[in-house]
Length: 351
Image 1 (cartoon, rainbow, N blue to C red):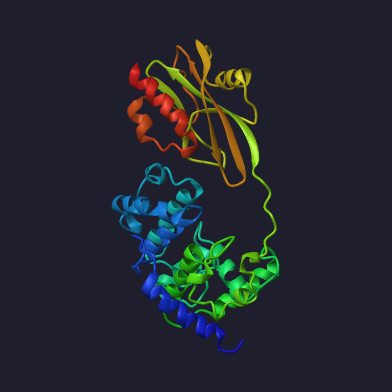
Image 2: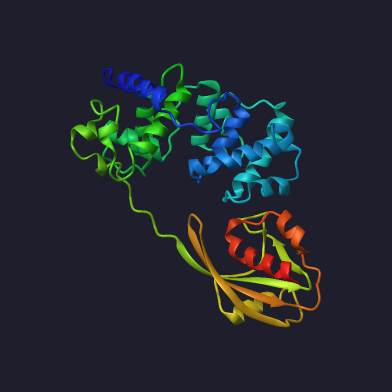
């Protein structure tokens, strides 16, 4: 492959030294902080993560404080970032590292992948940034940049393409500054080598980019169209009993461990809402629509109708809590419930 990979690496690191993006989670070699930021960055925009990262570190400054915290405290601190399986795995991994590895993270990508929630990308990012392991952190940015640099025209969703692109990424990894190289590739993909039409005029790798030389870099990478997310009707019921509202600790995989209002998933309408309420209250004094909301998950969309219902008796409910206003603010409630949460707060505040 000649000297092309070495030239790309040299030029891109020089560009990164001059133009790297500044984030609170950069500039550290602490594997705990790098691991935390990488888990937060999964499925979340880079610009969004900074404030959450800083607040989380104040509450859990090291792996031992995170391991010893109740999982509900971790979920509450995670509230707003979504994809809450990440927070539960974060807590599990902290326990493993603190209690089984004496607080020391594995030093290789292979070792890191044994930890809950640490996949190949996160493991490579952590290992390269914290320990300088020369391994590419293959995410969407790297697949796109590398496809264009080497004019790779196969469907990137296939196993062969993933291996080919990984091998090309590996050829770009220097023996030192591997973490910087991964971050340089990420920054290039996030700011210049963009999806759709890249900003080639600003790219430091024009001469080396085969897609640019072919005059059609926007055609890459080749990706099969994704299936649209499934649309699901959901009734969300704010069930009030005096100055308290029913919150249910979610047991299903999606949003597990978070607190939600009573739901009827897969069906909507007043009868569906009544049927859902009957699971938790013998008598219903009133039930009516107060609003609508929509929340997009990775593979599904909740199209929600929000109902307000009242019951005279706060019956004990398995996995449930009749929460007052203070508890409503203290418990971990997912972003999907924000519209309903605003209605519940308004009602409880006025009574």
